[in-house]
Image (cartoon, rainbow, N blue to C red):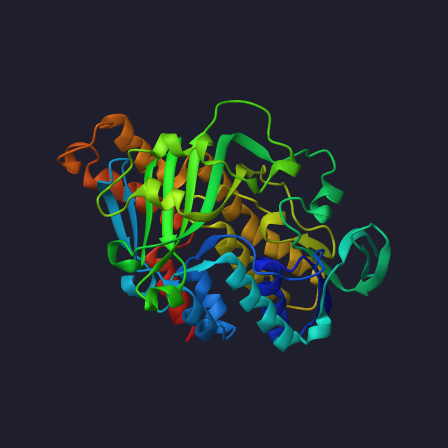
Length: 417
């Protein structure tokens, strides 16, 4: 089938390559006129890396990214609450990668151009309108000034055009802006010293004041340095969602650094990491309510267009990658595209909706809040604050929810052989 994908982000490009490998004629349209390596860091869970490895991308990822050895949760005093081996270090067949989002984007777009053909990735084309008729989908794309530049007809349209998706808005015109619960995020990348072995991801603090950091560059690690991606979350109270024009605006140290001024853990000096950032960006932590449906005839949604979620548990990009595999597999069953897109929705909408709702309730981060509430000044024995069985249930339930538990991943590994 001929398939149009609106959006050349992580989800859209992964889906394009999966669908191309399955024999479909895939065309990707992206609103920006030029792909550039922008953004900050991102984590790709092992279950999603599995799909990227299947597309032949492991060598490029391994040469660029850090293979994450451990995820460590700590309180605001730097005391460890939970440490979990990740990827191959947990006995899985695939790694977990921490990488600069821009580097990942460029790896994906280069691979997609080589696989699909450069003419199949078309830039400077934003989807403006579309319709279904006689078993086909027609779509019109416009340039940055809103002038029509291309009309395309295909068998299927996939809206992978992000949290402000035009495809989603067509079906849900009254949805309004994304949902915000008062947390602002400041993000940056800092050249610093390795910590905790040089391949550990750390989440410290609690839901209303949290610091996340992890190294994202193998090249820097090989020089004995650490290119550290970091995020500061602060609950700012109730109020109106910042306007879209204020998203990704330059951040100011005075707005958040004082709250982290005494967060020196010995093994990591948080204020030093923040102060040494090259640039700092500020934007709100937002999501959207789960939808009643994604698929409408021969049109469906994928990635952030379908299920934007809070960045808890590193699930946003990983879930988008899983979408690409799922839609490909469902299209391989029979020759009715509408039925396939409905099956894709039935397979992926419920679990992603549960993740959105769980992350609103703090998700796996609830362990941080429990420790903060029960031992705000720190602890000498974690067992007296958060007993092992209670902690294991929090971790186990969340891993099963996001299909990152060991049992599920090993079943996937066995099925792929």
